[in-house]
Length: 332
Ligand SMILES: NC(=O)c1ccc[n+]([C@@H]2O[C@H](COP(=O)([O-])OP(=O)(O)OC[C@H]3O[C@@H](n4cnc5c(N)ncnc54)[C@H](OP(=O)(O)O)[C@@H]3O)[C@@H](O)[C@H]2O)c1
Image (tube, rainbow, N blue to C red):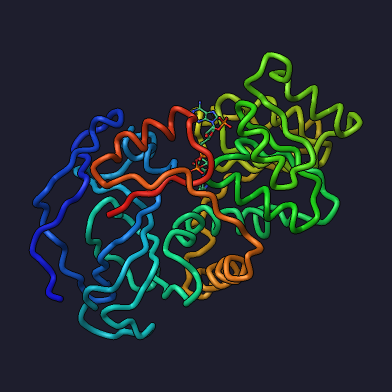
């Protein structure tokens, strides 16, 4: 099938709320250059990072097509060497930019073939988020069996997968989540304790964590909420513990005076997925691990909703309004 010359794409021309996500029905389809593939996207993942680029919390040139990942088929292979042997028609998933569109030109080095037996939906429900949590649990802090772990936003896209990974390692998991439905969901994944940090009874979640751990605190905190939780995370971590700040759902952690870490000899990390999968070898290592977990059924995926491309503003509203559990997807 030949590729048309224009496509539907969601273009952000200026910073702002979900309303700046504008549908362009006749956007030019990019031409893949050397080292690139043109992908006909089928399903694109929505990630919290997309909102940071939309609002300007993370700078990026505008106009911009958001979307860091999609699954689809190879529509064209760019000129030059093709070391990973991609062919037109291959079913693939990619990590790059420009996913809120029918077609995207992406680096072949950040594209992988999807094995038989794994659906596009399961891959997109766990690709960027799942690769992230695998790197967080293996490299940022190597979680050990028996560790006490505090995981914020445990019912979210990343949190839903991280809870499962932590339990599979044998950690004791204390999750936080907003509201009884989210709490029940995280409990169903095997979390040992789940705190409803938005409820009147449990809003002092630090006290609760201290009670659960006999006053000791947790070995590691995974905090992607940021502004609203960072101080509590510092209190809830044990002496010689680690805090991994990996997101800003409520806003960024403010500049932190290092001497705040001294009393308990706390270690902190501020990782990003893309820093862990820079080389093809690193990327394939984590992708293979993820696909193995998906294929064996050891990792369950939860899709909140698949939105049509032109309802992306609603999807952002739902994500930022804390209305979702698991992953939000777009149908290209
Ligand atoms: N560093 C990396 O490489 C990397 C990669 C992937 C994701 N992340 C980060 O991981 C986090 C989760 O990403 P995601 O895409 O999976 O999103 P998500 O967890 O599905 O959604 C964010 C969740 O954060 C919680 N939250 C707490 N305070 C909030 C507030 N003021 N506004 C909105 N939400 C709030 C909400 O859960 P409750 O209602 O339960 O509080 C909400 O559902 C984000 O911070 C993201 O930036 C980082």
